[in-house]
Image: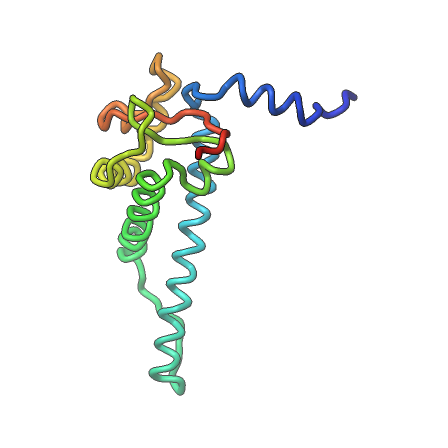
Amino acid sequence: MSAPAPATTVRLRGRSLQGRRAGVVTRVAAAAIDLAVILVGLAAGYAAVAGVVFVLNPRSFSWPTGLGWSLPVAVVVLATPYLAVCWSACGRTVGDLFLGLRVCVRDGQLLHPGRAVVRALGYLIFPAGLFWVPFDASRRSLQDVLFATMVVYDWEARG
């Protein structure tokens, strides 16, 4: 069995990838982390609604039911500003931060808030567009192609 790579080796590997376009595996892993963040936020919202219902009518409290259609709407309402604000403010969501990714426009600048919102909606409406990455020579998802964005490896702190 081989010994784990020293931290300096890992840092050097990261530097060699700095600025390169991210692949599909890393991007899917970041999206999974972001989904977990969104689901925690959704659960907190559900608990808050249940708490308000309990405070207003404690004698006949029951957990809210029949959420059916409202659940996907709630995810879009919560996820759109989460993604758009993260991408336009610092270029990273929580998942991107953990995996050393940054979303930017082609010249490396942050996304304008309007572009970030439509890109977020594109990902939420058609998440399978992410799987175009392995087939594109520039490692772009369909959303990247449509909104002229890219996702790069970026571990270095910015001043």
